[in-house]
Length: 416
Image 1 (cartoon, rainbow, N blue to C red):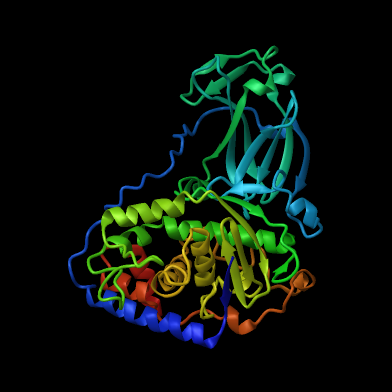
Image 2 (spheres, one colour; image 1 turned 30 degrees about the vertical axis):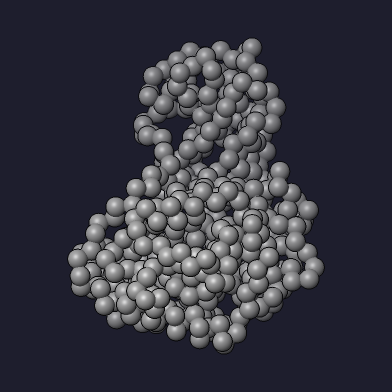
């Protein structure tokens, strides 16, 4: 288990290394740069025909509830059978009985135009079972399946109508899936990281028991971090000429053993390793920073509200640091101190400003609000909630090469 301590020495080291690193980067800004050549495919998001018809799920509703509300118990939150999600699949559908299914949302915002599908071996295509106009944030809803009510006419993904009779079909032979035409959700579903996220039952010592307030904020933080690693801005930065180079004799990011990433193949391998991380078991620490290693991932209370601003010396960089430990890197690498950690912090800041992250509004969860004070382990330092001024190094690169990301560059001009 690795420890991170928040102190002035670390802050000085991090940003001294970052300054030298980005100075070298800036020197190459006006040179020729490549397009994005990294060959890392995105997950397949099914093509949706917009005018398909299915029954409105509301008529089949059995009961509705919300998850991860403030009264939810520690035991329920940390039950990995009941509470888990995949970072690129915040919507789930499960069968409960021969006649009912359960739809759960781990999205921190409503998702519109949701479609429930079923796959049966006898049919070559998925069958469009029902339509949900809007699925509330953090909702858990149970529906009766239409075929148990005698509905026999359905459309397939290709739009073909089929007559289907399921009287003798067991739920064990039916596979359910869920999609959405909501543009926000489609971006999430198309992300390369597919980490499973659970909430750890850590307690005592350097840990504080996670509650619903912290669990909700973890959904936001880890989804945003997945979007950072998935972004074109990150893929481009990895492949620009003379970038990313540091003060290590002009070499690239390095591992603990001293191996330096320097080629397209290196970066494809690194990012694929990040995307394919199987599991993060998240929690709340009280150590002056965070803890990470294996599936374990925890940060202190101040990170839960400061990550929206970047006004603190670390916040999102600390999440990346502890994730680095989870990927097997130690403090001798540039992933857990130095160039890569600072690089992720700057990318996170850029994507917040351009509103390219899934969550950019800290009022969605309201972690900082007085009404949530009873659920926090510490107070809120308001100086950590100040909007960042000026441009960071990635943002300066974007402006200097405005043809690469024209939308980003236009937004950033107001901060010059």
